Length: 152
Image (tube, rainbow, N blue to C red):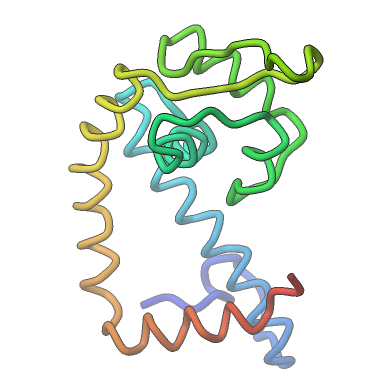
């Protein structure tokens, strides 16, 4: 198992906080890249998948762009562009909000729900690979440690 220093080809990192931070950044990027590789054959990216999952959680209720953006794993300013791409693929629908015409309601389509069902099989296989590398209790501890870093 290579160390973070070996992976990024650097000298030993003495400060444990710096080492942990670099490892979190590297590992997060590595995980997102793996998810993107899994999703690529289905024509969606990890942020698009994230939007679809958020919308599925609404159980048919619509959301606006600001609500979607606030729930995203990777908060980005181009959520409207993500939605446009999902619209082009028929995975979401957009309707003008009746109360405020400047806002739009976004809802997942049946095609979007079907795609989520389809991609969950290979993503579950990815999770099994992850689970085979780390014990369940270690994963729980890691999640707690990472929660402790969040300011929110």
